Image (cartoon, rainbow, N blue to C red; front, side, top):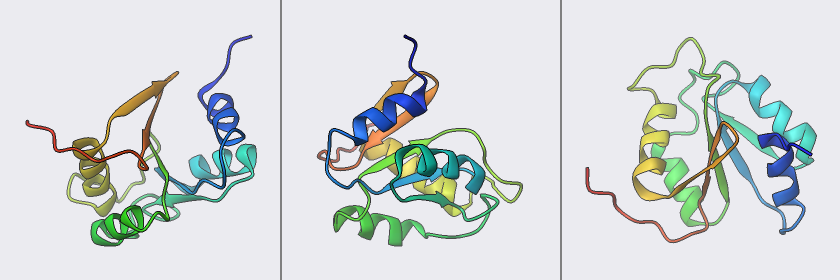
Length: 120
């Protein structure tokens, strides 16, 4: 049986306690994860991916306080997205401080692990 990234993620969630997740991209992408997993999923960047919500500072605070456990990076960015958008800043921060795990074509970060600083 070949598992899709979404199926693999759902199986991961079923082996853990309640796990909040953020998905960088549009709300349609996030909705697929939420419906399959039956767990809350928020689209970073709002409905279209280009809204400044949450801010990098709010995201960092939520991670520190244990409100966000996983981050899924990937395609599906909205029309308002750019390298200076909050979503891009969040993705860069996560990439610089956490280890990525590839599941099929999806990049998943466990934000409950100890953060590190990458040397670029």
